[in-house]
Amino acid sequence: MISEDEIEWMLERRPLTNNTRSILSIDVGIALADRIINEFKAASMEIYLPCLNWQGVSSRWARFLQFLVNHEQLPETPRDAFNAFAQYLGRVTSYRALALTSDQYQFIVENDSIWPTGRLRTSEDNIRSIIDEKGAKYICKARLYIGRGLLKYDPSLSLHDDGETAVTIAGGYFGGGKVIHLMELSVPLIEVLGYTVQDVSDTPDEPWFSHRGVWFNSTWERTERYVLYEIPFFGERLVSLRIISTIEEANEYIEGFKQSQMELYMKKA
Image 1 (tube, helix red, strand yellow):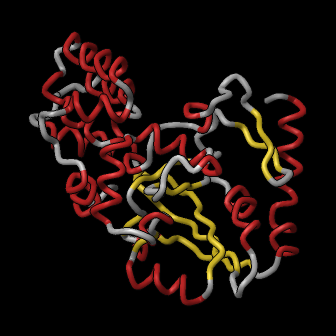
Image 2 (spheres, rainbow, N blue to C red):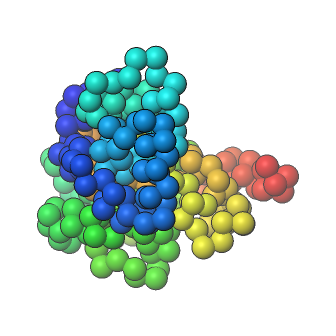
Image 3 (tube, rainbow, N blue to C red):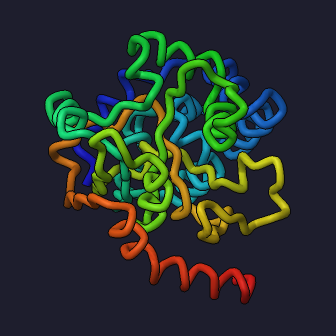
């Protein structure tokens, strides 16, 4: 169940206005934006185009269109359609792991939200402007290739459906009184972008890649999920918290997963 507060949080950031083409052109590119709009018109579903203003819908536009086509009784308004699609997608349980001091974790608790690194360095208004100006897919690519410095302030976060994946990444940030906080979260799937690593990669024909000695498949949504703005309602969404205090403990935690991923890679699963 997706709460009314969660729906309102999303729509406050991307209202269901009628300037969908201009928004889509930035989020997915002009050519795809025009194709999407034409397909909705061909299916007589153009009334619901404003739902595509939200990146968690536009990145799943074909699935949303099919959802509408298969709907026995069409929603009366775009707002009704947005809510219906959100409930249809449901929630996903995924993990965020961060190397934090106790004060930094308390900051998350007090703000009831996990902020992206960019939000820690600039205003919320600026974060929203970056998202509106750069577009969802560009931001995901900038996150994947963070070493290129494509964005001055990163407005995105990653989630991973396997806690071991999250710990593998966070394991490179031990030190300075920081320990890994592995946070299991229940998040509306519509709040998460529908892109996989492969979708934003420069090498989409190479599905397997290695990071910190662990193999990952770029075609699986579970490998990395992209989130924009922040992860709000932290207190309500936190399912469990695990503290990992040493690199040795982190290595022990991921060892079985590392081995199983290697086996899948060798089989090219």
